[in-house]
Length: 178
Image 1: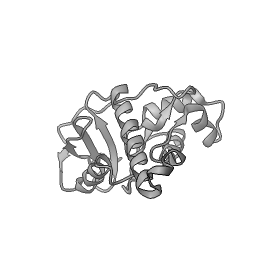
Image 2: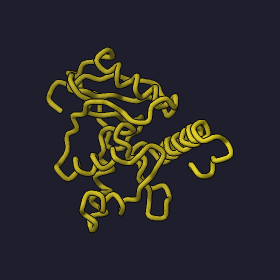
Image 3: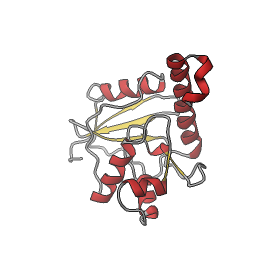
Image 4: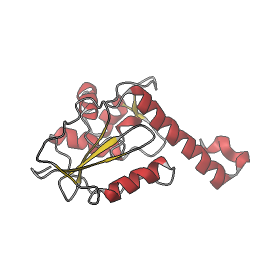
């Protein structure tokens, strides 16, 4: 992200979100109490209008109307972090992957800890769905926004998938969809 930073806040079911942009693309989505989240800087400019489309997509996600974001991104990170964050975007709505599976996906099966560190530094929570990464046993592990929010996001997606499945397949075939 360049030196020009615009920001906006939006309310969500998981609390207030801070949206950051370079004026062209999204640079971050941060939750309240976000580990390693930014502090507002005096020269940043609040611009709700320029971030309205991002906020609209997030609202549609929380309403169960959107499963994949179409937001231009300007994420600042190392080449390795960018590879991990791109792989996160490939995890389908309502599904999870372990850190080991994610490491395999980027061609670095022995770099599980480094993958975990990159996931933890994801600047665009929800849009780059780091909440979909779980431990090898399927259990919830670290999340910069807190485990309660991670649990809420995963449950929201699970419920939406089940609802969509019932609508698509009928109630009698529900088990085959989930």
